[in-house]
Image 1 (cartoon, rainbow, N blue to C red):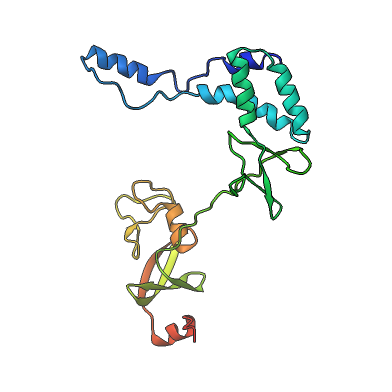
Image 2 (image 1 turned 30 degrees about the vertical axis):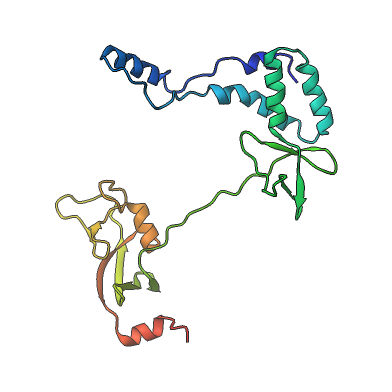
Length: 236
């Protein structure tokens, strides 16, 4: 552990985006005769800047016995100063030491899964005493479902359910550029059809989510009973 860790811990953090904007805003408010305090706090990185070196040190100690790591921390923060005490308590607080294994996965004393975050990057194995990296929490992925029930007929047409009725809808490739005089429109979505026209909600990405590709609906007709019976799964 670095001997100057306590000094680094109390170095002032760097503000993002050009300094303390709330301070400037507050000064302008005072100049304008406003007497209330701004409710939003200053947005700076001071806190994370102070704790980041401690977190990085703990991550580098993964694989070592926690008792040895704790001994090194205690040795380098043996000063009775308030700063040394803060560093020691902060580092110990970042380590999950009361751990139970459930199905081989680390959980805290309340039975909650231990996952990596800025303030708890590591944990101590309850049997071996080894410092280990907390597992990453899987990120949730959200996929937007199409607005309409649809069944592929071929490469250029689908059976699409609109207002509880089935239609055969034909598709064409999305134009790369919107024609301002005679813009192509998706007759189902009723929006201008273009890959990158940002003036409307349905840009190229939204067409891909709705229709599964860079295409737009150019025509539709009511599906016959024979087509519906052939293509739609009734579940019987």
